[in-house]
Image (cartoon, rainbow, N blue to C red):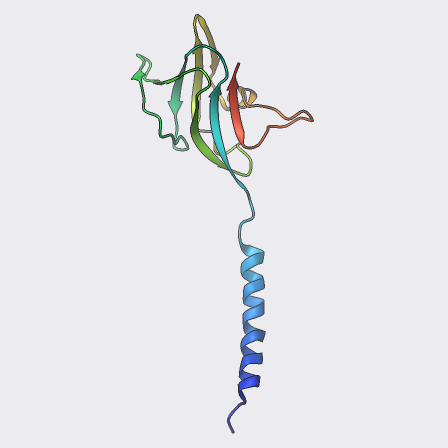
Length: 136
């Protein structure tokens, strides 16, 4: 007694549909955001960064400070990618310390809460996505 081709196809569909549904159900749906720093001034600015494992950029380091912070220079209207975040930025902050130097002014953020305050905000609250720090 050989099963008909239709019954074999029906059984295959019966097995495949739940597997496909399970794969879709258990796959991650969190969005992936780029993290950037943008210089929106008319001056060249320096970023002094204590990087962590989430830091990722194509820009070359222009120096290292005595405190072992990596230095990056951003020309006017230039931006750089510094990392990526999956959904919320809390676990993906790309640096432990960030200092922004423009002329004689220095803005320092030494912990996660201070760094998060530097990111662009939405009008209704919360951080804008993709995540960006605008230097103005």
